[in-house]
Amino acid sequence: MKIGIIGLGKMGSALLRGIVNCGLCCPADIVASDPLLPERDSNPEYCGVRTCKDNSAAIKDADLVILAVKPQAFQSAAASMAHQVKDQLFVSIIAGLSIASLKKRLGPKARIIRVMPNTPVLIQQGVSALAWDSMVSESDLELVKNIFLQLGEVVKVEEKLMDGVTALSGSGPAYVYVLIEALADGGVLAGLPRDLAQQLAMLTVQGAAGMVELGKHPAELKDMVASPAGTTIAGLAALEANGFRSALIEAVRAAAQRAKELDDAY
Image (tube, rainbow, N blue to C red):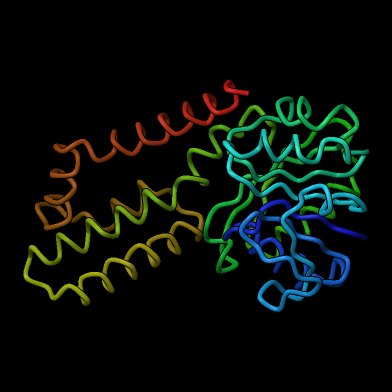
């Protein structure tokens, strides 16, 4: 199998490593294109694959093409390679762009799987949601699923849910980073050294997520910590008074709306 990758930023590079690690094909059968990359037949910084600046060269002989560019860059990227598009399998990790919008630029023969990964794929702890069009076969889907399993968990969803997925798991790490930062700031306000406060905040979030993995509802776990007239219920009351819960809900809603706007622009 020959693979073309359009865009080798952090996410594109993570996918490249996943492809090589799962043994899908050897580096010699992969061509990656990015305007910031040097032209090299075997680039040691990128698993020994051929790197170039020409998108059409990356997809010319490819059976599988991965689109890993920003939404704003897709239109020009598609124009530069449209004449080379055949009936290849395309995997798009472009936030917001629907399968219909992708087909508009790539042509009706393209088989498309849309994937929304999140940044923890960079440490093989991500979650990736897959949606696909009617031309995609079970073997296509299994192939792509195996790539993303190298980078964390995989879920299959209907495409109509992808804006919500983008807003929650795609953008969600940023919300958690703000949470960790704010908890650490609170620790500093309470007199803790900055490095200790950040360590405690990070480990607390990590451990709390592990508890949810055991299958209990978050509300039940919250109630286990909140003793009558105790410190935790006082802190929870402060969160409610300051709109913590509604702010997170609004963040997901706003991100989902922005994802829809990105697609409407195309």
